[in-house]
Structures are given as C-alpha cells and as structure tokens.
Length: 189
Ligand code: ADP
Image: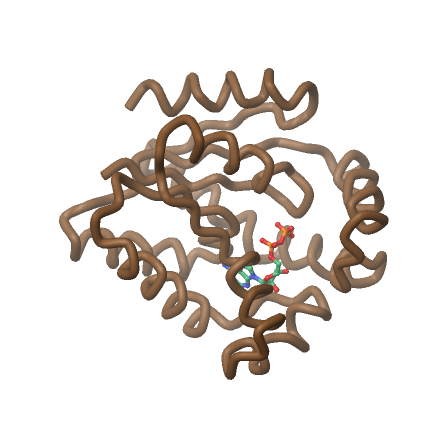
C-alpha cells in the first residue's frame, strides 16, 4: 500500500490538493475534518459528541479521532493506499497510526507538508468563510485552530522527520504548480 499524509496548517490547501491526488493515483482520501462534518450534519451520536469542540476550533480528543480513523481505513479493505488529510494532528495520533498500519503489514510511505505563512492562511480562510460559512472559520475560532496547530500539531513534523519521511513543499503559488511538486514526491515511491 502507498500511504501518504498531507500535512499543513488550516487553509494550507490540503483539501484542494487531495482531490487532485486521489484522481491521479486512485488512492482513498480520508479527511478527518470532512468525516466529522458529515457526522455533525447527519446528527449522529459521534457528531453530537464533537460538534461543540469543532465549532470552537479545538481538536477532538485523540481517542475519538483515532477510533474513527481506524474504522474508516477498515471500511476500505481493498484500497491501493490512502491519503490522510487532517490526520495525524498530534504525536499520539501519529504513533497510533504507525502501530495500526504496522498491524496490517503496512506503513506510512511519505509525509508531504504544505508550507504556507500565517498571513496567507488568514487571507485564504477569510475568503473561504464567505463561500462556505463554516462556523470554525470565524476569526476567533480560526485563531483557536491556529493556536491548536502551533501548540499540538506542529510536533508531528519532527516525529516524521526522525523517520526520514518528511518532504516540505511551498504551498503558495499556482495550484497546478504545487500539485506538480506533490506528484514529484509521490512518484519517488
Ligand atoms: P482545517 O480546514 O483547519 O484543516 P479540518 O477540516 O481538517 O480543518 O478539521 C476541522 C476540525 O475538525 C478541526 O479544527 C478539529 O476540531 C477537528 N479535527 C479534524 N481532524 C482532527 C484530528 N486529526 N484530531 C483532532 N481533531 C480533528
């Protein structure tokens, strides 16, 4: 299996690039943010459990997120591989993912981090908010998400760097140019 983690702060373009990657490489896309949002709009028990946290811009607890992720992988037993988007967001999630994949005789192939500065992120999310009206894109909630990123999620980078799996890509510029760079990393595997 080819398993890629697409990593980056809120607004880095993970969703946009994931769409393009799954089309080209026929991998399964797992976006934990999208799955949580689907649970919330379907008012499932899980959705009810996490909706306040998400609306507030906080991370969902690891145990809940990891269980949901493992479930999602298990729903796709014949998959050629996965693109993990929005997961792992903590070192505990990264370690759980390694252990889970190992139990299936698999592993993370590479982690691709989209590098985008904070000024650009804030601008992009303000634009997105006009289109989607996501509650957690409002300025104060967004601030909380960025804080969560810099206090918890950023530590995932050295975790994968130590495994020599991390590639950083400039996430600012033309969408197709960024995609070409991403493909350059994927094609090495
Ligand atoms: P973004 O657009 O900021 O990248 P996502 O759509 O990936 O955001 O996620 C939206 C929200 O869902 C997060 O702010 C968080 O509350 C929750 N969430 C998504 N993935 C995770 C995760 N791996 N761990 C904890 N919470 C998560």
